[in-house]
Image 1 (cartoon, rainbow, N blue to C red):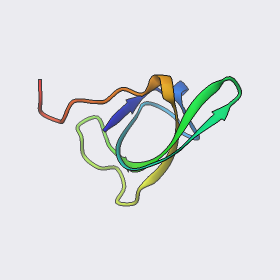
Image 2: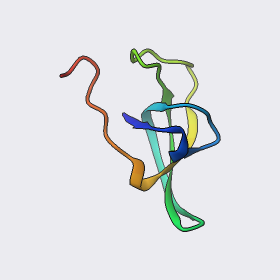
Image 3: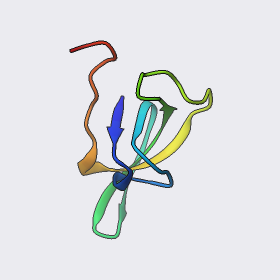
Length: 72
């Protein structure tokens, strides 16, 4: 699972929490490295927003692995 702010992914608004189902290629956009991902978007409480995976282009330097839901 990854969590990124709005400024660190393309084509969306607000904070993004994504349960990654596919990791794609790394791409250069302007002066930054981005990673093509696909996954299930999650709400703040960890429930799934939509049954269909969504693509996301995420800034590499912003990627942080989120702890599993319910862990402290």
